Amino acid sequence: MRTVMIEAPVAPAAREPCASPVAVPDRDLNEREITTYWSADRTALRECEARRAAAVGAPRQ
Image (tube, rainbow, N blue to C red; front, top):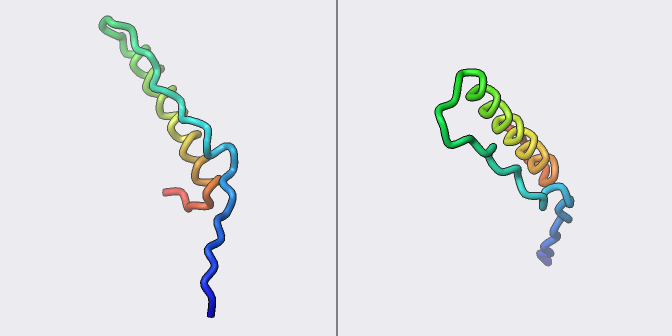
């Protein structure tokens, strides 16, 4: 019996860095701004994680 390690190629999309958090102004934010910035960050995080999971064949949580 012989053990052979086979490495699956990683898709180029998995090598792309995730988006940085949204830059928040240095002042108090109103409710609309908070929702907008938070939503943008969450969307970017979900997209990035979905891309990485698909690239490595991992199940999503």
